Image (cartoon, rainbow, N blue to C red; front, top):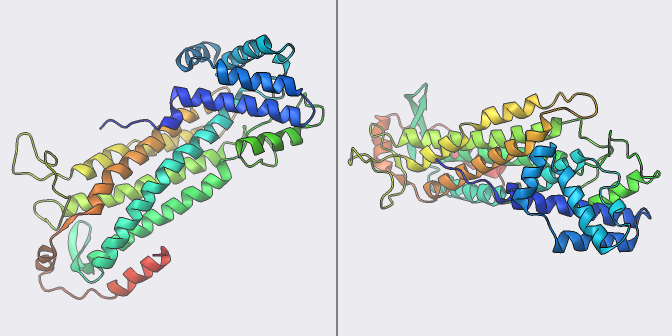
Length: 371
């Protein structure tokens, strides 16, 4: 399955956000008396009217080793052409990792904003299933074998709780991770005449990013924790897809994906009804655990700036978020209108119809999810 990379991580958006950072920094310097208004306006105009070609700039960045080097050179030249002495206001007090990490944070904020509504939609679908089928008996299954009775509403309620808890974890970790990175060469605000904290606050305000107590570029734990939280969310989606796929097996045939022309059939075995949405979701999330693991290996940074690791975080997050979003999109039509064979569920119970406290527990799950 081909997974479309989120627009937030496209070359065009990456360069646009890097320009936003540099322009905001120049204005923050002006606000703190470290740059003239004329210089700040020249930098803003240069970014607006003469931006670099994103693809060419990224080629130059591969040669230079970092995006900031060709970006800053371009912006300084364009700003200087508009206003003499404005070049010195570009990138003052910053370093390449400030640009890379702050751009990554902005990309993550935009990317997560595209995921959250999809999670909410899936949660609504699961709520509907849990309410509609709170008393619909079906076999519980343990070790892949039929067990005592549960209700389909209880199963849907458990899916909902897993999804809700995972999304709440993502939001908590995002609050920790999505903050400004601005520290300069070694993270000490060198070259800002004692105004480092004020410049950071002004820069954070312009980018709408919280400002941490100190630069975090050599502490990658919060980013890794956010990646892990998104990984847990993808795991919650995989749990739903796995259960649904098993319930749709011909030998079980209790829940099927909705029928759609040209979807779910086999090119060789036309009698089959494949769980295509589940297949797509599981394919999308399969690599995420490995990607999260790589994020964990990026935590031990060498001294005040690592030689490697952090340069690849954006690419890792682009994959993690894009694949999670793809899984959400694949499951949405499946959960919106699944075909549920209540008779088949009852028949499979073979008389074991005591569902215990499944109805009460389903309602408790819904309440815990604020449903």
